[in-house]
Image (cartoon, rainbow, N blue to C red):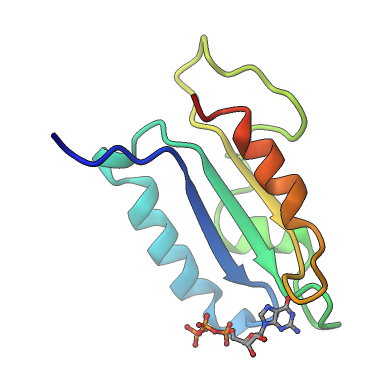
Length: 110
Ligand SMILES: Nc1nc2c(ncn2[C@@H]2O[C@H](COP(=O)(O)OP(=O)(O)OP(=O)(O)O)[C@@H](O)[C@H]2O)c(=O)[nH]1
């Protein structure tokens, strides 16, 4: 019973700074959802081909994730109670960046 969610991919428009607050609210809701506890979260900051797009650091800041990302590369979190969460910047139209994100995420999907 109950649909099991393996991971969450949260796509944010990094070029739409006016909506970061709205994005944060939505993300906070998902992060505090009991049914998603311990589910890995991949946050993708999209549209980095647009010059005004936020940097990764800015996006982390505006989404309130500065102290919550768990590290890129291979980070073993299986003995901890820490939920895998990372931010990767990407441009979907340019086919850039999200591959690394999905690769990162795949290590946490059993
Ligand atoms: N420049 C650029 N445009 C993109 C990229 N990815 C998607 N788009 C464009 O963004 C448009 C749709 O995306 P959004 O407007 O963000 O759509 P949405 O998230 O469904 O709608 P909102 O909820 O209104 O933000 C399309 O025209 C896409 O081609 C990208 O990486 N770079």
